[in-house]
Image 1 (spheres, rainbow, N blue to C red):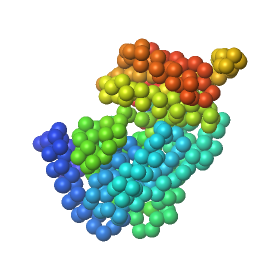
Image 2: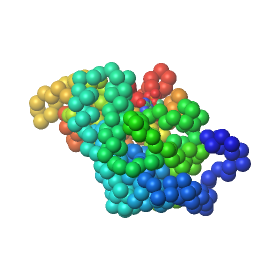
Image 3: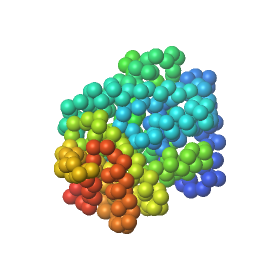
Length: 326
Ligand code: XMP
C-alpha cells in the first residue's frame, strides 16, 4: 500500500472525539516507530509543525528536540509564544536560535523578491543544519507535511520551515499528519490543547514579514511592518473579523512621502493594509471592512508606529494583483 495515499475509507476528522482517536493511534504508532531513539523537529510555530511537535511530545517526550529559528521575519510575539507553549507549558526540549542578525545581514541590499526568498530558504536550512550537527544520536526528523503538500508537490514540503537534511546525516522521516487536510490538523491541534491563536491562525508565508517589507529589507522598515501588523491583528480580533477574513496583514513599501507632525514636515513611509478572502489563494477578493474599524487602525498606526506618516488600503483583487506584494 502506498503510505502517501489517503485510504478511501479513512474517516474525515470532524469532531474532538475523532481527533482524540487519531491522537491515540498516532501516539502508539510514533512510539512503535521511534522506540527509544531521538527525533529532531524544526518548529516554526505554524499550525502544522506545532501539531507535530505536540503529538511527538505526547508520544516520546524528551526524546524530541524542537529547534525554533527566529529569522527576524516573524510576527510580533511569535517566538515568545513558541517558547511559552512548548518549553514552559508542554515541557519540550526546545532550542531557540536567535538568527536575526545572520538573516538580516545576508538580506542587506537584496531587493529582488525571488532572491530574498532563496536567501531566506537557504539560510534557514543552514541554521537548522548547524543545530542538527551539534546534537548527537538523532535518528528521526519530524516533519509537518500535510496531505495537500503530498498532492501538490509529491510529498516534499516546499516552504522553508522544513529545512533540509544535514550533509552526510541520514534521518528517517516522521510525518504523523501527512494524510490530514488542514481542517483536520486544526481539530487535532485543538484536541492536543494548543492555543486557538496557533490552531486557527491565518496562513503566514515561509519568508514571513520579509516579503511584506518591500524591496531591500532594513531593520527600521521591518519594525514598521511588524508593529503595524500587530495593531491590525489586534483590531481585527477586537472587531470579530479574525475568522471572517482569510488573510490580513500590512506591507511597508520602499518609498517615502511627505507628511506633517507637530507642525514640522516629515518624509516617511506609508503602511498598506491588505485584507482578502479566498478559497484556494489562486484568486482573491477584497473583504469590505467597516470604515470605523479602518479609521481606528489608521489612527493607531499613525500614532504608534515609528517612521510612518500615511496609511493606504489596498483594494486590488487577485488577479490582477497577487495577495502578497512580493
Ligand atoms: P500570492 O502573493 O502569490 O500568495 O497571491 C498566495 C498565497 O501564498 C502565500 N505565499 C507564500 N507562502 N512561501 C509561503 O509559504 C512563500 O514564498 C509565499 N509567497 C506567497 C501568500 O501569503 C498567500 O496566502
